Image 1 (cartoon, rainbow, N blue to C red):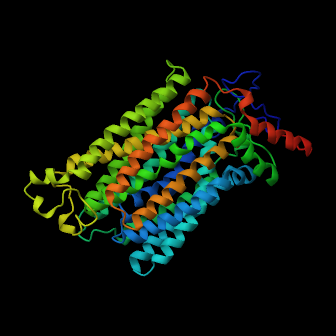
Image 2: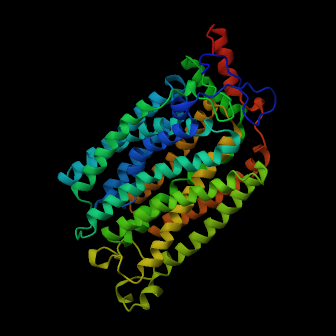
Image 3: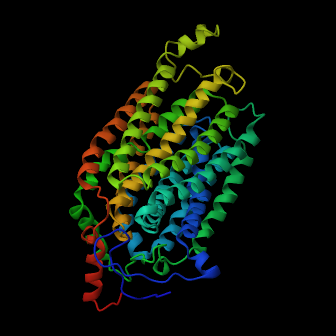
Length: 493
């Protein structure tokens, strides 16, 4: 492997000269294969954010006290937003492996805080503080993840690599939800037991060690023989300036900000206002399992659309936009009837006397009133929850693919990933705080629908003006900037 040689900032499909390298053979070639490394990256997220997702997907983190959970999430996403904005610079300075390692620690602490609250009811302050610390760590982890996942594949493989990562990552949610479902199947307490938290805690602790076994990105060669252009020894000044250069040279990224903002906004209504509000712990656990399992199918489906060899890249971009628009209206129109006209459904089951016209925070206040897996109305509501999971994977996969279509430079993609997670987390902080102050479920639902549509509307001109059939070398301004800065310092890259 040709380590330490000067890299060319162009990539497969880019215009101009492309320098090729011979990939290693045998076991070494398997270990350094981009798919192997993206799979290991998926395992890190399987053990850390994947299990975090399984926990939050239970509604109120598996707790009865939804207020503490919502305040903790508000703190988490507030610090996440700040951390992620600067995490691209940190990632490019420290390297993706170290950034990923540092980012994984917060998940273990956060899950431990829920175990502490299960044991000591007055540990709410610890849960909120752990959420704030996790926000800082998550900004690092997800920025490093985005940089690696979008830069390791060639242009023709980006949808596939996103699907591979997303499938493995969401297996964490599947495994965690399976454990939770098994342990809570006979539960009558409407809350997760200590055994569930301990199991999650052990798995997350294992996940912290996985970045140590990943390859150095500087030694990675893509499947087409092009080398991933990782800068060596960049200065902090260069990195902070690079944040501005990425935004100045690619201002179209701003048109994706509304899509970023909406990308986790819907979790609050889905997890807290739907799953956590109307189902008992057994049904919530099964819903959680269905939700994260369906994510795998959503990601795989979008990978076929986004990597279709029969369509130009611009056509694939517009196709994904149309699919998301249709899905947004289909599932939210269906959900609106459950939210607003639930009384009509219950009239048919002769239990309408205990319900208002639409379900509110007071509707399912007692355990006996919550929906169980054996109830007649469960199947339709669970199927809608499956569609929520499919839609989530499709939305996130498309965002990553659109950013990857704008550049092949990992330094620039780290900044983009930081922007994505910062804007996403700012929205998340706001909506979780709205849930904590008991904003009506209908308000949360309508805001979710409106923001999703707005995100797609703003993204459309960006797709039309910015997405090309191939990425040009002229689009890689950040790599050029860093190469020039290092050359001035006399550092060979």
